[in-house]
Length: 183
Image (cartoon, rainbow, N blue to C red; front, side, top):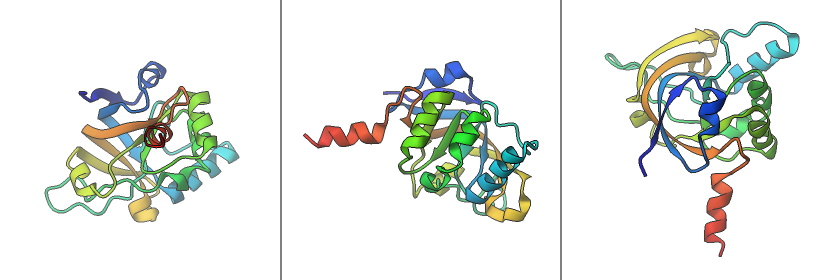
């Protein structure tokens, strides 16, 4: 099956058109954030302060990219373990984030929040950071430069590959896949 081409940021309609198991190629702008950046963002939300980026419709890619070599937009950019962001993800979705990209399982709390706020969780292939970086055409730090690799980057991507794991309907590709082999 051909992958679906989607453009970031996403609308509610874009999210509702995605189903667990869909392979996608993302074009447009996505942001990066890992644990430390998530903690800072949620602290700002709890204080009622303005965020350094507008989360409305955005994808957050859980990645800490390595420095770019000469002539490259970014260094290796593979996904990190998503479960480390589970404590923050519901607040991020409530604030307008529509998608997150990482690797590994998500908590039931996150899956419920994806349904409530119409969001999706996608997995990128772990261990393929050098290949994934080729789909990133531009990278710039837009917040928290003091966090180094964990700073928030604005990435312009073209044909960035990922698979929908959890959709806005409560479907879970990992759970469905396990059932297929449990017979």
